[in-house]
Amino acid sequence: EPASWVGDDGELPVTVAHRGYSSVAPENTLAAYASAMRTGAEYVEIDVHTTADGVPVVSHDQTVDRTTDGTGDVALLPSSYLTGLDAGSWFSPAFAAEPLPTFADMLDLMDTGASTMLLEIKGPETSAEVERVVDMIVDAGLEDRVVLQSFDVDALRAAREHAPQIPRGLLRGTLDADPVATAKDLGAVMYNPSANALATRPSVIGDLNAAGIAVMPYTVDSAADWARLTEAGVDGIITNRAGAFIGWKEAQ
Ligand code: G3P
Ligand code: CA
Image (cartoon, rainbow, N blue to C red; front, top):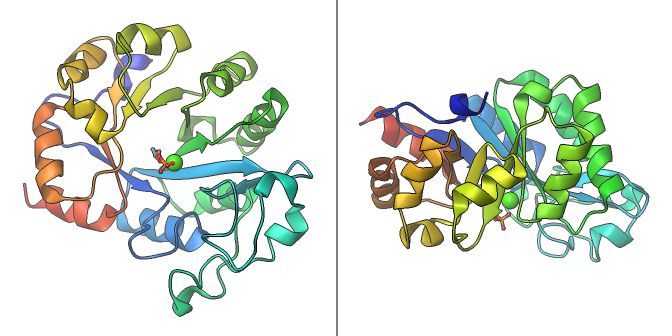
């Protein structure tokens, strides 16, 4: 029911841990997600790509160069190579044992906490690749704890076609002329713009909420911006600093 995605007036925005609790642990690793769930984030945001041998894995970038000790494109490499990489040392020697997780690992981790997964399909993914991710969510019985999001409307359309019951959100780097119409056309329950884009026309928050569509801007890490966006009526805040944001909310 779309209306349930929108927070009540006066309610503080939910916490969306961007790439996990990524200010204290390496982004897109199980350590970062376990930490976010322990800290009480209502949502954990993850990025998924598919490997050369068709295995969905958790990584933000198209290549592993920045966040692991390996090199190359996820889409061109086999999962056996990728899962052997060290995805933690770049962040801190304390996380040297942290592997690059498969999406299956991430689904398993969901059993250890109560957060909802905000799953970004990074793309470009084929419809078959989107369908594989969707099937894994269904097989894990986690349809009620996942929202799929993407900048790629084709990925959202493929997901809708294959499993319409899994809710979807649209990511945007700039605002659409008519965000409500765009979101409705995709059957999206969330419209998640960059915070800078949202600042150009904050009135869209009320328009989207009135249509039952939640708004969760990214990526917002300062208390001044948390206050401004809370005042503007957003439903969630996508942040690298999940713990600090939860602390800030407790102080309101
Ligand atoms: O959840 C929104 C945000 O993650 C989109 O940007 O580049 O961090 O994936 P990016
Ligand atoms: Ca993302």
